[in-house]
Length: 75
Image 1 (tube, rainbow, N blue to C red):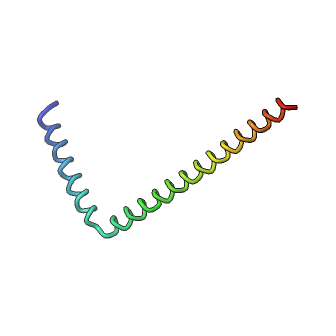
Image 2: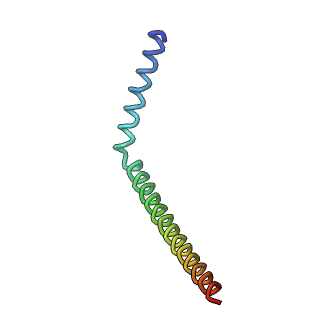
Image 3: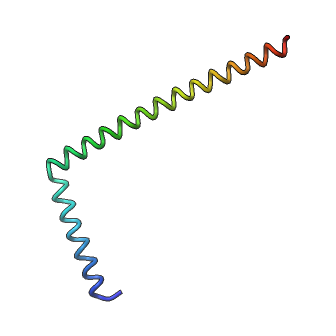
C-alpha cells in the first residue's frame, strides 16, 4: 500500500468520524434513533409472544397425542 492510499484512508476515517459525531449530536438523528429502538423493542416483544403461543400450542398437541395414545392402549 502506498503512502498516498494510507493518507486518503486516514482522511476518510477522520471525516467519517466527524460526520458521525455531528450526526449523533443532531436532534433529528436522536429522534430517529429513539423511534428505531422503540420499533425494534416492539418487534422483539411481538416475536417473543408468538414464540410463547407456539410453544403452548405444541405442548397442548403433545398432551393431546399422549392422551389419545393412552386411550387407544386401554381400548
